[in-house]
Length: 351
Length: 227
Image (cartoon, rainbow over all chains, first blue to last red; front, top):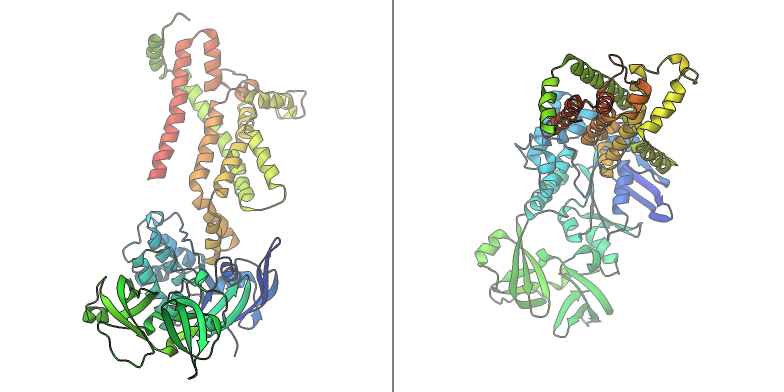
């Protein structure tokens, strides 16, 4: 199958620094790839090369199987920068800019601007000065400006960082919708693996300018040995000492008084991860098949794209748990409530 | 010289309606206006191009134009006098003691202002603005035009500062124009002459007019930018 875009051994050099080292990656139509990696891994540089804003020092970028110059890439792709940038003009003129330079008619421009602004929930902002908007609103405007264009590939650099919670929720939901309903091809740079997981199953891990692996989120994270916490802000990541059990499971001692069980045989120092949505919560102790069960107290409740995140202190470790709003209300959980947590041994992933 | 300040001021206000004073004022605006037009027509595009492109020796070019900002008007006046005088290399153009000579001299004087201020306002833009225009699909020319629009406040300032310097300078107007009544006499040369003659009232009247032109223009531009 012909890829929409294919990078072959792309290297980018700035003076003596190698920002990208022979990156090869293919992007298929309708796919959403989360580009993850610590700061300085080369995520932004890679996006800029794909966007046609930087010329690769060596290697090539193919568009539908044909070698593409930066000028062609700038026509088929558009990039939304991490730091929102706006023209010193009204919101309307900002969103209409790309359409104007691409020669769209006035009527078509009007229609697309209106549609794009409604997607980011900014209807009625047309005549406002873009520079006077808040940071979150400017980021939404930047996204609307990109969505108004009929490009095949949308490149987003850390779209959820530096946002207030309202804008973060709006943009998070919107990105999911664009990817899943509109099937727009996207490459999204993120330093938070949890955000990446919420958006897509496919991640590309970049470190020190090298593409370490590409694939399903868990597969990629599992291959990783380095302590993830440093860059992923991953919650429920624990480091412990693993001892294999006779039944094929492994006990992992995380601290003096906390041991969890996982599936698979491991020995020595391991890093494990439990998805916040895999942890069950109850108000009373219940008999479950789950191998891991702890009592704790709710420290914090936060809203996350419609779901709810709880931070639960078990006295030995801090767990992040994700439940629906409905469950939160039904269980009557408040900050300070005593709760019981449980998760299966098979929910513990080795990183 | 015995005249008091208040008395001078009273006379000055009456003198502003004097046809001779009005003629000098109009000539000043015309000469410096045309000089500014020429300077901006050359200086703005040059400033934009230097501001937008990266080339070897760019710092040197910028330093050169910045140095030209400090050229004393009398020095430029003298150099041009030597060029424009009958025996000079451009003597055949008959520019000496001619309003056109003042226009050319003032244009040369203020062109570095137009270039430097334009260049600096373009360079002061966030470099990401250029990338933004590019990633939205703008061509090279469209990117340049967008950057000029983003820097329009600074570019407008370049034009105003050029006009201010042109209308307020004395050296070129005096040495090239020669302060000939009815031909090359402008506000600054008239002020110098009348003060030397002891006609303080006329000097004050002309000075008030000169200051009013400069302030009114700056005020108008400020209001325009806010609107």
